[in-house]
Length: 363
Image 1 (cartoon, rainbow, N blue to C red):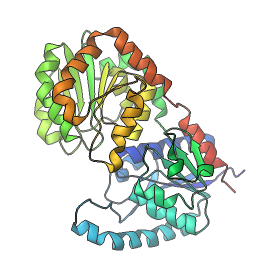
Image 2: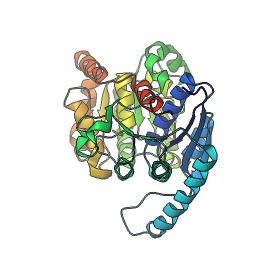
Image 3: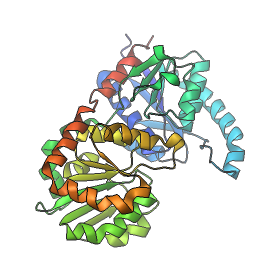
């Protein structure tokens, strides 16, 4: 076994693709301190900031996803994709990776496709219960496909599938011991319940509108709010910052954020669902209906069906939100059952299991 293997990891566009990629990199570094790791992302997306902040080098490709309507960006897609394939080949020739890993997003499409065509072993990690276009395209050449949900053999070669779960930040495994630190860090009132609101790294309009409408409701129920509204919405909602409500575009220390929470309101992206299962706090999932094959609703339903979380569709918020929230805050047996059932679904060893698949491919 090489002591200084070389890995290219590619994925991005949203936190859901970036943080699993960083978690995999951290585990590779833990097992192979001399390993060389290079990230490849989309040059104008958030990975260009988040990956260097995590201590890794990244190169950007000129690539963007396909929009659902006719736009100039769509017309440029073939040109961008060809440019990305050419640049990916140059990056691979220069870096000479032993294995290339893709965690989803269009940037990973180019570099993993080129690696496969050059007979370099590739691993793809599919986070959702319904695979994206990129991973479906890459699956034929991949040596191993790490998935988080059962039933994906209708999309992928069953012999390549490994049910590993999604990689999560390892600092989430010890949040119970960080409760006091979190209360101090966020300057919370320890005599009030805390609701943490997560709309994803970019934000979620419907969740933000809901929280804006319910600020008085939270105050009346002796609840304080930590509200991650996303970078697109911060200017609109920062005016609500008070002693009882903390609004921010994004929180870096997610372990402390989860440790502070008594109740979490969240979208149901795959990474969020996996993290929340490890955290084990009562969750209200409000899935985004604007994603391929409605996969967030499917992700959330797989948890709610096992009584591990509350699922409220956007169309049901007016009728159900207040009663479901009050029940979580008031009924300790209900809260405890949700937490225990959610924790049963956690896969805390996912990152190690994915890295095991990668290590097997080092020549």
